[in-house]
Length: 498
Image (cartoon, rainbow, N blue to C red; front, side, top):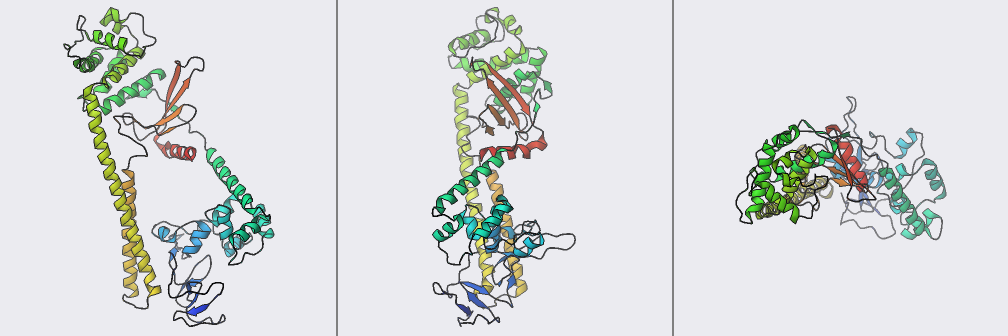
């Protein structure tokens, strides 16, 4: 909480101690509340901060650690939590499980440092900020104890009104102290990056079983592509829920009827725009293979590894194809269907719906943020009332109950905000009918996916290797992570993005 008391304005360069009524106090006067540099000290009614051990009438975050039947009673003021540990008192106080720095074993106050057999740090708030750290705790974690000891012995005590130039020069010990600090800051960032990049690529298992059907590694990619096509366009093409699995089982067992019927439906959709007569699965002038032949001739895509003149042999030529070729052909027809007016219209409709949902989600997040901000401000105002006002309009118990109610509402608002953010599409995410987004892609051809047609609660790894001599030769393998590896994979993705 920002400490601002408009009635108390000490002169520049002077330390004026006054009581709450504005009367000057001597330094030796220890009785009653007094103000020093816009801060009110109250030895009788104020509560002490564990870090600075000053009794002031300001908000303090209380530790929630229950301990072993003996709860922690320590409190930390806003200034100490922010400068020494990089935390906001009002925010952590809303958490039901927040533990203070002492309970976490990272407290750097003079008493705790001595108890751990270490030297007190002294004033390091300005020093840590000058070196690019967010808090004293972060600087202590990054710097070795030997370096810190040398730094402390070389530095002179910093005055309260030391200028920024003097501070920088004093820290570096050289005239060009600013450049030295910039170098330290760059090195610090580099060290952080190197530490994060040490997270190894999570191990995974080869993916060969989909819908309880066993496939070869070379076929897995085509199987997943077909399943995603059916999932996304099931309404537009009236695809039944169990139909994709039944088609794959038929392919696996060598039964062609279901597969040919599905392909014929797509080819009729493609051919309908040419106003031709519907094609059937039988041989003849209007055979589905005739349309397929026209598509392959017009398409830039060359169906590799297919037997020569297999189309000329009619249905028997198709039946003699192996499963890999049949899967490639199936996806080729699905891709051609995407260019039809029916599916393009469906894509446009779904994209409009997606845009409206995205807009609604943004509005919901904005409203949740405003609600949380309003409650936080209300909490700050209520906490500050006993300090800036002498009127006791509420009893202590009533005031405590009011604060507890606002805290509860603020916690609910926070949960509401997190839930609203969860409905927000990812950055630059578009409608699925236009493109399915990868979760992550590295520079070595490894892509992480979450596919709803397989299981959107697990990560899939696609490893693509291209032949340097012949770019048309691509080796693709798919792997799957166990559900319990979800957090591990997310951690790896976060470290690589940073």
